[in-house]
Length: 135
Image 1 (cartoon, rainbow, N blue to C red):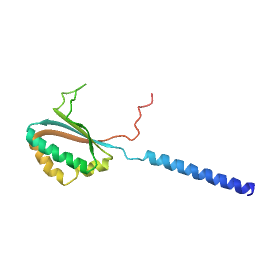
Image 2 (image 1 turned 120 degrees about the horizontal axis):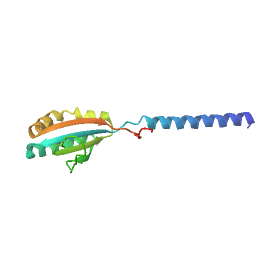
Image 3 (image 1 turned 90 degrees about the vertical axis):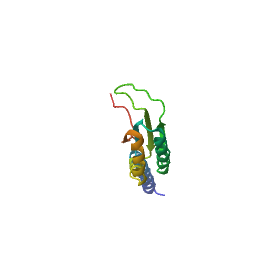
């Protein structure tokens, strides 16, 4: 192999490795961020809400979500008093959380929920690579 062809092979390999490394970094940067559903609940009918919670838990599972908090002890550290119950669940992406929210079963579950509680809910997109602001 001539020195010129060796140089061409080494250069080609280096360019290929650089391309693969950049592709990997780009893929990491575009990974979808998780999505969190946060619910603030004041239960007014325990039995009715228990029915809602069981069925909603099954639906969350069906769409790949998982609970992070489900009515455990919560403590206010600032602002207005907390509702009696807080739930937080996680989906892999905003698209998956939206698919869960748009499921046909939600209309029936919302009717059960609204009869059994005062409820506020929102979806917030997490960050895939959060870092504190530079100082």
